[in-house]
Image 1: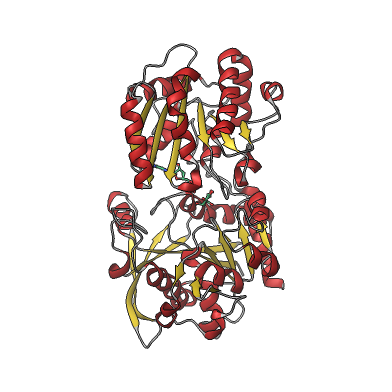
Image 2 (image 1 turned 180 degrees about the vertical axis):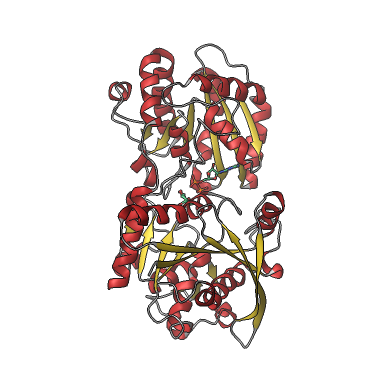
Length: 499
Ligand code: ADP
Ligand code: GLC
């Protein structure tokens, strides 16, 4: 009998995306299927449950993928005697996994995934994602040929799945175990206690060691309390969430009640491959990186930046959110000409930060070009064409762009925190030039810290071309594939089932 795994998430590539969550959930089905096959044990059957967002509809319209109506139309029970109408469509992912799309246009057919055009959260996000969880649990035993062995929920949007499993679906899924992966503890799904009626939460949920939070509802906390196992996306972040600095006010609860396993994210090395990426101006690999110079020239030209000999091209691809520390980059923009660097930034999010970068790019137009928006193809060209990618995140559960950067021969300059600490190795300049590390780290998220690390990177780039080439090659030949992490998830699933 194959191990049946149901993934629940609010986004996944190629269907819809706002950040790294989508990359990870999109890559997991193949990773799990391949790891199980290589491990020689039981095969796995993976199904993914996603909201049918407007972005998904648009993706289906553009792509060749077929989607079928499962014929299942139901009213999903909510609290207070209410219910919501839902239909279920089925598509097939690239690894052959079933992707079940929860069609509820009144909740999901919107321009953004979570926010409106002004970057304000939708007022009914709690109800929207409660519906995702509840609908998925209602239909999964039927759609998967029996109850799944594992429900693997991702982030606060899916955090009610372990709760509903315990309180509402034990009869239909008596042996199913649940796992919650926290991709970012800063987003918890906070709701007033009065929302509990419609969400159909039991009194048990409202206990301090469950989902209650200063008199309110905390969906992520509830999910952590009810899940059989909790993971986060890097070992360092698993330690950090136990501290007041990174615990987002849940550190005490975590220390007392929740063992958090750190399983580092992989990347989809087939999709993110500079030797095959159709978005790039030229293709290259670790043995022949000449194409990278073409990508660099194309990026500088598209950005209207006139690079002088010896100067470096810096890149940023990021959500513009406080987490990412981009105010430090903004602080440094006036110094770029003195440092001998020019910068291309692609990002969107916080309107105040967008305004600040707009102003900076007008004022320092020779040294800074910005593109405000979400543009996956440009993200790839930017990562390939830059010499260095800046990631001064204040906290970073894992971070994927530094992994993409290394794979594309772009040197990451990062704050040593969370997954950035776990993936970017910095043993000092001389060792970096000998191929013993992969990037530049700084310990304090201040503009001085960033400037210090950037200066080191710029000096090596300018003065030691051979060392720089070695550094690039070392980054490009690291193994960031999913194999090891997928094995760790399978192992955890089996332990949860055996417990
Ligand atoms: P987070 O999920 O916190 O945003 P990650 O580094 O895990 O951070 O993942 C970010 C993902 O989103 C990467 O795939 C990155 O390339 C992509 N991304 C971020 N901002 C943009 C943007 N403005 N346009 C296109 N892709 C973006
Ligand atoms: C979150 C985190 C990011 C992580 C991603 C995928 O968005 O902010 O660090 O890489 O999830 O797990």
